[in-house]
Length: 154
Image 1 (cartoon, rainbow, N blue to C red):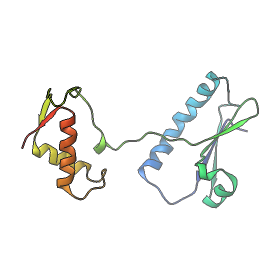
Image 2 (image 1 turned 135 degrees about the vertical axis):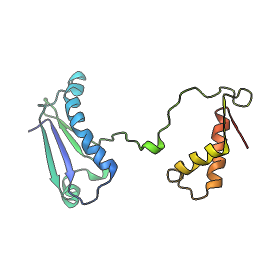
Image 3 (image 1 turned 30 degrees about the horizontal axis):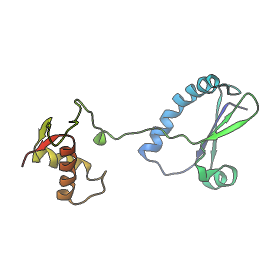
Image 4 (image 1 turned 180 degrees about the vertical axis):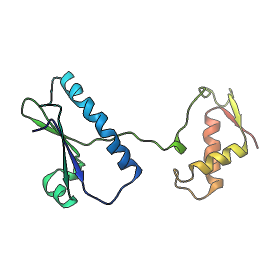
């Protein structure tokens, strides 16, 4: 018996997040033995096995409603099931803060943003915010900018 068993459901469905998750597995596999040992729950060993099954097999054998995709076997003979969620991102939705916004946005302005910049941001965010109306989305962006202490130029 291996310390870590991973459930992989055979499927033709693939997306970027599934791929990112699979790429993160080796790192998680390397971290789990140390993490669980540190909290007094050492794994039986550091070995990893992959269980490939169809969706129907997963439904009948595993707690699929809970999204179980990892089974951990501990040295004391117990086991635990776990669903992993790896944080992912898409470069078009990343924002980096270089300066803090205003603590008093109505009285202390920390910068300004042009209508052209607002429109560019709105166009980038259209898919993320499920909007097809660019003007409505621009008003949302303008409101957020004002709350941060930015002056929205007309």
